[in-house]
Amino acid sequence: MTLPADEDSMLDAERQTVATAVSTLARLTPGRTGNLSVRRGDHVAITPSGVPYDRIDAADVPVVGPDGEVHGDHAPSSELPLHRACYEAFDTGAVAHAHSPWATTLAVLQEPIPPVHYMLSLAGGEVPVAAYATYGTEQLGENVVAAMTDADATACLLANHGLVAIGDDLDGAMETAVAVESVAQVYCQALAIGTPEPLPEAELDRVGRKLADYGPDGE
Image (cartoon, rainbow, N blue to C red; front, top):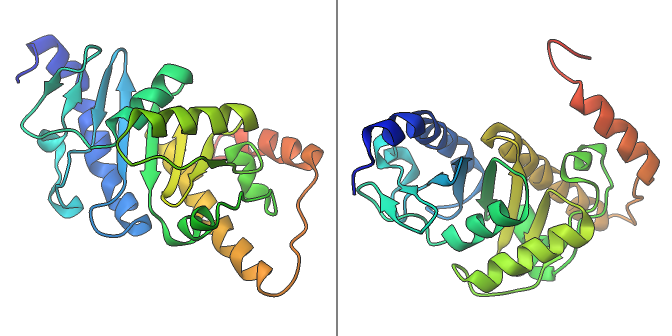
């Protein structure tokens, strides 16, 4: 279905953002697993279902309207219900979902990631585990929202599945997803040697404030 000209123009940037970010997602997740989306108003631009990452360009990215109508030549990702649940529950602009190996290792153990490294301040501290539900279902979205709400987190593991992260924009969501995967690897390796020591909440809060100002115009 073709978008009206004004809506099509409005979402060009969001489609391009999704198409560009799949190269980062491809480094996190195997095959054609995982998905990304960006919200603009009441429309969502989301990765297409089953299209190899190296073949996705902006024109391939479908747009889903508030009533579930799909605009574009490709079906949206099967995880659309998960993305929509996050948008309905949180004031967020983007969602990233991956099957990255180290986070998924802990997900199949149904083991949360404690804040053993300050970069988990991007996720709000401990990364919780959402209860298992079949992929692509509304129940999975409900479980993710419940886990992230209870933990006041911006990321969570999906039991026996993978991880999801949210952000103000797709750069933020992807940065959090990458941080979770990196710390998951460190945590797994540390567990093989001894008992990792989590950082105190006060330090995570302090680092979170520092990271908020990090960049060329900040610290």
